[in-house]
Length: 187
Image 1 (cartoon, rainbow, N blue to C red):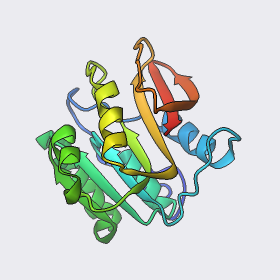
Image 2 (cartoon, rainbow, N blue to C red):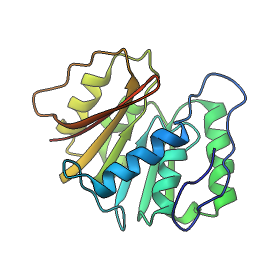
Image 3 (tube, rainbow, N blue to C red):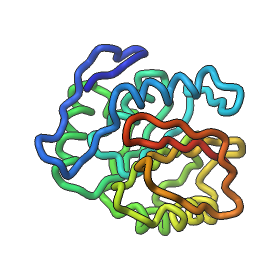
Image 4 (cartoon, rainbow, N blue to C red):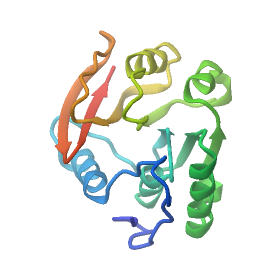
């Protein structure tokens, strides 16, 4: 796995040796960023954006955002092995000043919104495929007002999953890559 574009392009990332963490594949990640940059349906300028990477795993998505000039990335992860790899990747890329790592359950952290203190331009949600709480997560993000106006939420799910989202959530686009479904939405 590597950084695809931007000032950190070409740097390889540490990855897990077990199956507990499922890093986003390079092809899917590259396609997400192409869509953010070139789509008529989904538009976001990463430069100077604040990013919230939920279920961050090894941090590949958030680190790609930093490579493409995001202002800051807040990583949220609670799996010890993934956190260790994320910290190694942050150290390797020398981006510690632009990130915060929260070792928390996603729901617990969002409930305490004062911990985050900012609104985000982009929120990336990559929960375990077996997790079926995505509707409640999107609802909580809306209730806690974590997304700026016209901000984007990207959700990575199993292609076979059939999510039902809160009424406030508008799906802007969906893409499919192998076993992955990428959903782009906003409020």
